[in-house]
Structure formats: structure tokens, C-alpha cells
Length: 189
Image (cartoon, rainbow, N blue to C red):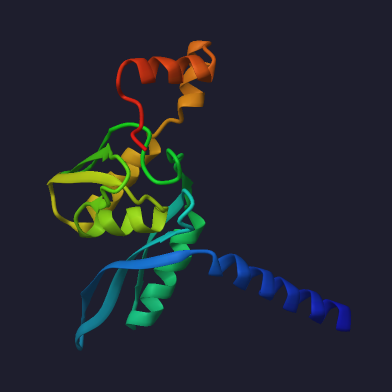
């Protein structure tokens, strides 16, 4: 019995350590109303982005009667649906990307060192939690935070590491990098 209790405490401690590696950002919070017989019943909807600043990122949506509970639900939802994005030198994207969700469209471009994160609100939260430090992003179309975040994730899912491209083409990674350097697209460090 004592062994079972100690095991559950260790599990809780491991879960807390795992959760502490993530950074979460609250992107949007909305007050929503449900009309019932006695009037309106108010609740809150939260959009949260979670990441480990090393290439893993996810977003979640939560609704509850109280703000902290909605944020907690959204954070748990985000931790369940993490994606991995390969980063160049741990600071930027490997290539330019386009993403779309509904009427929201985004353009993400790799940037040289020192550029910083040039992006609007919801996209900035995604890049900060992802661990990207140099990127240029433009949002066209809808400015709805939900659509912007989903469009950004749509673009990030299409990010391909050069090693995977080399494998698909049947080339060596060094050959692909040499071609990149010869064409003048080499990363400027």
C-alpha cells in the first residue's frame, strides 16, 4: 500500500517536471453567452499556445464558466496536440511557407540572425513558444486569432528538414547544402 502511494507521488512529480518544461501564452479570451429560460448564462472561451521553445508547439481551446478554468482546459488541450517543427540552427525556419485556414492566410519567411520576430499578435505567441528567434511573418485575410493560429500551424506542418528532402531525392545532405551555398541562399551567420 505504501509502495503504491509513493509510486503515485513519483508519477505526479514526473508529470509536474514534464509540464514545467512548457511555456504557455494566452492568445485570446472571449466572453460567450448561452441564452436560457432565466436570461443569459455567461462563460469564457480561451485560446492558448504551448511550446517547449525547442521545436515542439501546440494550441488548445477551452470553455468554462470561470476564466482560470477555461485557461486550464485550453492548456491541457494544447499539451495533447503538440507538433514538432524542424528549425535551422535552432533559431529560424528552413524555408518560406504559406498557410491557410478559413479566411486566414499567413506567409512565414526565414530570416537571418538578429532579425527578431516580426509578426502580429497570435503568430508572435506561436513563434515565441516554438523557440524561433528570427522570422518575418505576414497575415493577410482574417485577423481572427483562431484562424491566424490555425493558419500558422498549417504552414508549420509543411516545414521540411533538408535531410528529408535529400533522402527523397536520393542525394547526400552535404551535396544539397553545397548546392544551396553555391546558389547564394546560404545562411548568413
